[in-house]
Structure formats: C-alpha cells, structure tokens
Length: 251
Image (cartoon, rainbow, N blue to C red; front, side, top):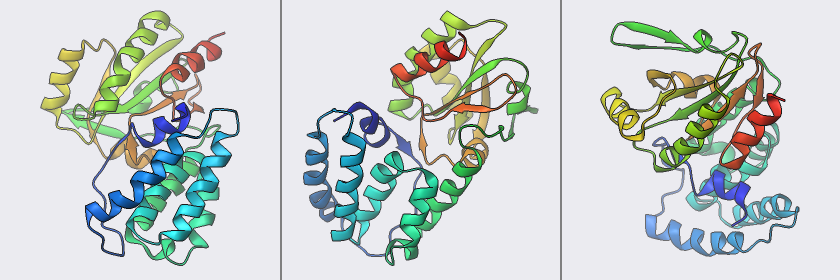
C-alpha cells in the first residue's frame, strides 16, 4: 500500500462508534472490504495514488450503501478528502447522510475545519491528581510544539513513540518541545506505558476526550505541529513526515 494512505487506514486506533444504519455481520463486512483493500494496496506510488484511491473509494461506496461503504468513507475518503469536500460528499449521498456513524463522524470533520492548518490552536484542559493542565501551558508560548495525541493501548501510537523521542532529543531546547496528550486512556495505563517506553517529554495526563473533541480527532495517533504563536502548522503527521516537518519549521 502506498505510504500516505496506509498511515491513515491500516495504522490508526479509533474510539468505539455507533452501529451503521443497515445491519450486516462482521463476516459480511469483511467479505466486502477484503478484496477492495487488496486492490487498493496494489495501487502504484506514482504521484497519482491519492486520486486513484479516491475514485476507487467513491465507486465502492456507490455499490455498497452499507457498513462496508461507511467504513471506506471513514477510513479512505477521510484520508484523501478535505473535511469540506468530505462533508459535501456525505450530504449529497442519501444513505450516508442518514447513517448514525457518519453523523457522529461529521461532527469531528466540522471541528477539523475549525482546527485546520493555518488556524490558531484551540485550548483544552485535563485534571489529574488534583492538578489542571492546559494545552496553552505549552502551545503559544514562543516555541514550536509537536503534540502527540496517543493512548497506551494503541499499537500504532506506540510505534510512533521512538520516532518522537528521536525528534525530541535532536531538537529540544528554547525553540522546540514535544508534548504527549493521553487520549481515551486510563491514567495508570498511561503512566505504565511512559515508563516502559522511556518517554522523556511532558504529558497532559487523563485528557480522555478533551483533546480529541477539541481537534475533531477520530483516530490516534494524531500528531500536530504548532507554531510559536499557537498557529496550527501541520496535522496528520506520521513516520518520516514528523522529522521533516520539524526540520523545515526550525530552519
């Protein structure tokens, strides 16, 4: 699978969601999705892969007004369309605009529009052991801040940690900071994971849904780079793109 879409589809952890409008068994959904993703995986990385993936997804959804189609909207189209385009597409599809899962996801897409690249950061807070910590304690204070929304139970989140530690160790200082936001996680599990993974950078503990609601996050990890003034510079950073974005910002 080409890297950019693989990141968004196969390597994200999501919250539990409401069931789709039409009932299908898990086996029936998988039977629909498996051949589709096999074809998607075979798309060559030639610079046109996102356009091809988008059309493949639209064709699949048209043929599958069911849970399989809903899954492809949330996993594939959400990776290759802007929130504005995605909402317009859903609103023009009779099945999708009535689906409970899509209606819930749409709330997040609307928030993503409000917190897209170029917009100012949206603050949130979390309480842990009697102390309230805010995003604004770190962001908008004159440093570039790389914020990782993650959870201890999320495999893809933990897979990104070594990369984040590397970037932190390389660039930490007066101009740059890394911040973890424990999302949808039990504080005791977060603490255990921090120790096991030797995470050196600060954390907003027990954020639960505060951060994900503020930024329209449907799947983690979600890694966002903020500028010194609090402006959102990059969203959806993963893998090599993390260090590249930080290096370019700090030139």
